[in-house]
Image (tube, rainbow, N blue to C red):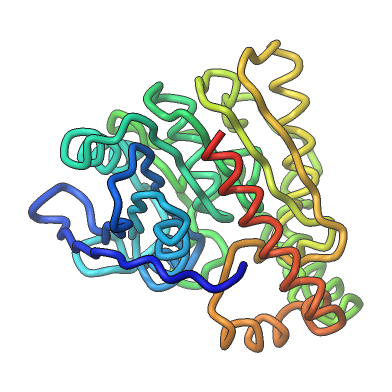
Length: 296
């Protein structure tokens, strides 16, 4: 990604003051485009702030948004309102005077971002990194299914795809693949078919959509999801630009991470162990694609 020497101002805002928890990363020069960064099952601000800082170095105003597992928020990733994203977006439009607004979501955050973009029309672009095409089951304390939806809208839980509890299949796949194969449980969830009410209605969005996926994703079938999203957009003659880019040699983690985190990824992902350089390069390329997509 190169070395950046942009001076930034960082402002922090609490849930109690503004209706959301996050930190705003501002480039030194005024920018008319803002990006809301929503990461995955980590839920807090750590990695979101890292990514938001990189966006700010590229000249965007970036809001790292915590949405659970953070002070004042849900302890678990379940029943989180889509209105929470709306609140952050409205704050950016009203206070940062942004003309263009983008969503950058990672993993469960990508599911969250696509679900919100399907209901709010003020997003100009969406980058969904390793997304799922359905609303999936919320993650309980064990992170393997909380028995409720991940998201709510207008006070009601969104219909969701339940996560398989077949731990025998999970253990067998994990042993064979020499990594945690959570993807197996998500694939089994689709075994008996997927009802349309749990599929994210991406065709209702008004944003340009970039999908970034991995063939070797061991967390959930993001490549399959990217293909399903494209099929849905095509079948509804989606009038806005969309693109699906799949990385053959990459892990589930296609978003930028601090260098020290890459070692941790190698402990849980076979592809990260076998092809560390290629996985790191994929993250760089994916982020560059994201920047270009939001700038367009």
